[in-house]
Length: 275
Image (cartoon, rainbow, N blue to C red; front, side, top):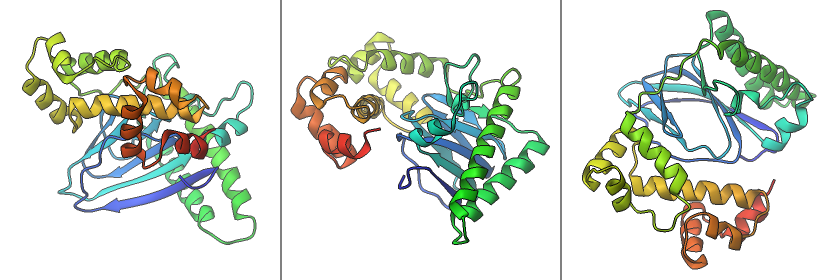
């Protein structure tokens, strides 16, 4: 993300390549328009219908699983954390729709026909103002953005009591993900002892992971460690604190893994992305 406010995009792809599991330090509103897709957010897998909205919090591991035989169309809104916090007021936190602590939280809402029209209208308005050179376009875009986030949060609150998680992951995978989420800070965590803990073979574990999540259990452990590390660095914690909390026995191993993942050293990342 290049702006310190928000960015909006409209994509339509044919024959799209596989999207790797990833995370980022900004909020994302994802509006699915057309295609055949499931969406994985931290192991919760949603089977998408056209016009579904997903709310993705900073640092959450996520990716779409696309059927590339048909066109894949969506709009996305990326939101800087500090910016949306600056617009919130007591009693009206605009990040509520992203908050996993909210009772019965669900990443997905399925808008009504009337809500779909409003969401599509707001995305069109945001796109038009964000990419125009008209007088006051940034002020206008900011006003539309604030109104849109109020509307999305209202939809989220109203829908929360009736929307059910669209989680198609197997019970086995859900248990393994919970196990990894709890134990990734342990430097002794390996694919072998994960498999042993669930009384399955490494082959079975890897096959189930790739089938459900499109990645290997080893890669998932690395991503969970990088996820935690990037978040800690972004709030100013020192690299020496970070590697100990993220499952690495020594700083040099952590440094190599981090540099390979982000193309930056931990210190460089902290300087560039500190919030």
